[in-house]
Image (tube, rainbow, N blue to C red; front, top):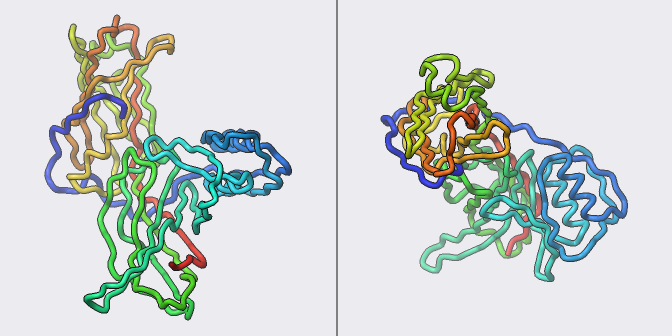
Length: 365
């Protein structure tokens, strides 16, 4: 949500925001296929953008050619890393806005163990062993980095691993020392790091032969765009419960209603009410506000050439199946309300997305 100020006014009770969804589901992703020889990096990045819609900025500083590249319906991250490797470069996601940059390798750079799953990439970015000199407790900490495509826009990542299986060089299972749990809010972020804490391995062990498991991401299944046909003046005159102020999209349907349209001289206020069907991921009341954080309200001129964003918004209520948000417009260039149409973007529903990772031969320090 791109407005300047937000005030969370009211969250109801301690009940779940939604009824629990029975099964985790993957998000759709766009496969990438490339078969090229001696292709310039710029050409490969253009092909990647055309197939996925994701832009990578070439900041290598010189034209480079990838000698050979053959990819058949692979995820975006796998394709992007393959292009980077062929160009003797590395891919760096911006932690602020998700912008992806391709930069040249340095002599100190190494290739981290990596796993791909649809819109997600998981890497082992750090392995550290330590010994407690006051006890016999020693440990090995593996730090995992999860990154996602900008359009995924997740809200939470669950700290607890699922189906985690780790084996040492003797093919014996390795048990976790400790494990975090609960949901970590990640809205507005482009990555998430978490630790796997294990017993310290014998000095003779050079690698961890196998690490595999699943992380759970809570994300919108997709975003719905509600376009109200009437102008602001007509919306103000329309019945609050009438068809002019209400739209339904999605399967099952999500209802978006303009509950209040107030066009005062110094401020325009639009209150949006969202009604959701059963079958979305459960959230606790203290997490409920995250549902509307990524919603986007804007006014678009009749000719489509101008856009007006709210100067502030207020989350007024979030209950088990309903959310209310008021948006305020105080820009002095608002002009005639008949010139503006309402556009609103909101999640269809929240789903639990399993992200599976598999690593082989993780080096030990």
